[in-house]
Length: 563
Image (tube, rainbow, N blue to C red):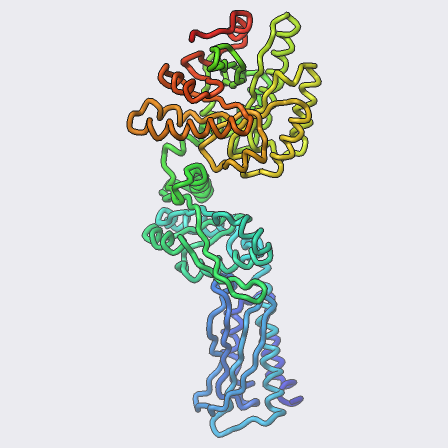
């Protein structure tokens, strides 16, 4: 062994490999060129490396399935000597060696051969690690997919070659992945993400790109003519995962936003546009795949304007609170009101639908909600100080508030600041809060009840609330969604809708809650609601939302609407 392994030929071979700067392919190429001198002393007839790696590992560091390192022109004996090695990332490398024709290795020679191959493997692994480190800035460490920098770099090369416009960008995320993580654990969830990336790398073409932007957000840059193939492949996508020693199949489904890159687009714009389309799939729950359009571009600009001007508008008090009366159906008297917000910018009134959804998505709606609430409390205090008897005012709060531990305390502190009776306040939440944050909602309701503050549930009937859910929550008022009311005047649906409304009113009454119908616009609707014993109504039949001063006139008046 000493003579062969420590020979000048072997030392020259090892010194000739600069594994810190050579790629894996460089080492394999150099080995093929330099093996002759070593092969003769070790009687090697054939030497090959078989490599098993995941598709994304191959893509990242240039692994090939088989590297033929040496084969003697005079042939070899079919006496296989197999040596197995494993890289730090789980890549299996098998070295297969065969002796020259008419020769058979003894145990000492096999030890020499193993020593040679282990050195080769060490160089190979060192080059792999150098390659990984070099590319780490462009690669997601957990999955091996490209990160944002890697996507931008690779796309920049395609752009320079005039090829980027031949591609489509898909921005996607896994539906209900948080629930999957919760069910099987984060470690298994990470395994699913890695398996998903491996699957995509197996499916993609060499020039296509797979990227991960954190969490379960992924980007695919695919050839234009492969979009349908990718979508068919993804929805649904079955993946196997091992949990507690058992192999289970997890079926993944995706929301996907698509953008067709043009000659004028860069990768940053393409990712942003596909992300915008993806966001719409979450709003339109029945559509999992949406293409970006020019209309979305305008909507996005509008959203950006809302985001940019919101804080300034808040400071400048451009948000104005309007009050819409609520009327008792029993005696047609004013029995409450709802605070509604309008954005008045440079004399123009911006409707709520133009800014509320954007603020909801960004979480800044919470600031606006408390701005409205404090304005209402200030108005009530002002009316009391001037001898005007206020009426109960309901104020809308986003379900996002339930994530904040100080939600209850902020409400109570503002009521205390203006020294008003809690009977004048009603907190209004949407029905979705009932099932999305049930436990937190229950705690919040308990705090409100303890402080004599009424709570109402808005948009009832549009979500998943059930009788048992309402029974457990014990809210004060249920607000019947206006979509039910509109159906009363539509002859085809009127009968079935009236049955539904009648049963809801009866159910709410049995639970000792009040019910109000919103969006009442016709006498027929009002008469039907009276007939089924609905408590209150709100809508243009009685009054539209009005300014502080106009509402004060109502408060000072008789407070009775025509019967």
